Length: 508
Image (cartoon, rainbow, N blue to C red):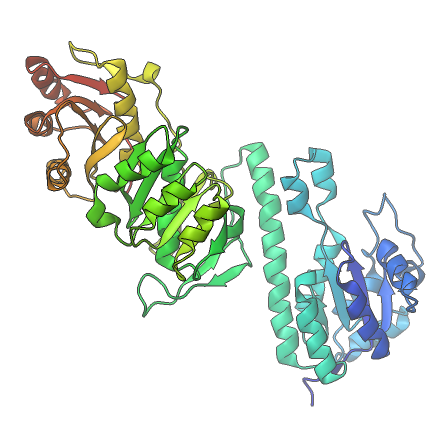
């Protein structure tokens, strides 16, 4: 058939030799002529397999410390020549260019070198030139040439060649060409992002070939896929596969917990915290976090910044929840939490998910820096006659960390490093405050001498007045309203204290 192509020759040029032996043995068995370069040729020779060096084809040595090996017309002519084009075939004959039917490449490890903390000079030398050119050339001529662009495709290509005894179909070659450009674009994006980060060039590119099919999207009738390496952030120790909504809650949990250094536990529901507490022990932190809203905690996500011990696990196990996350789990704790077959247990490897955020909308993508601003006591501006006590300042900063990670409009009420109530995602700040007060009352939490945090300024004094009537004595907010004086005056008349941060924390 016209779309069938028999592989008679192959060029192999790889950085890592892992997994290469079986494919070389298969090509030998299929009587395929093998061309290769430098260390790869030496590796193939060590297997006792016949190989012809690229230098013997080009009559030119590897030069410039190996920077130039395959970049030669006899190599790229053999790849790019169209087999059905008589003029191409005539030129190949005239210049003694051997046809190359298959190209196997494994690029220099640019990303691994970058992640290792190597010097700029070392990183630059891991920018592959010849390999990326071979990939693109072979993929362009997929009608005649099969490209294997990375070691991750070895198993698939071997199964295909075994099945066809060296014969490939057009659909096969086209599929591998798609793999090739996926690899090429991912590689180029990594290099671009490194250069743009070093030079301050305002641009960002994203390419990711690791696609993880999810159980479904936001709802069962929607398909969902995650692109990226989630295992850099955490390791799944137990439970079912993660869903689209699980990942959204996990992201929210990691971002919130990154704010805290002392032992803290939080419960996340629909990307918002419904309970948070910082305490000397994890068991105490868990109990007080749960007390903030035990109703919403049902079916939620638990996150902590401390190794989960057996006593805490026994307390947690009394509640139905989907996910528990922490930097570690004692053996007995893991056994307790693992009694529920589907419960997901994640060991957190890092609470830092990078400095950028992206959101798709309007057939495009929004990009912004993550809100990484953390406030210190010294940065707070006291704007009332009464200054908050040291203890109240600690509560203000605690509440402000939570409100920063709550959907706008957002209010958080707290005392003693325990969240007492929150209101989020409301169309008015007054409604958010009323929701927070109602939540606290619902679970018997007294707001007397508590603090209030707001993600944005108060346009009127009504929120401060409502909070005071509920027992709140101290307020933290960005400030910046034209009518800030009204809120400040109300606080002064009623012995309240208020601080400004100067920074808004909208989260839409």
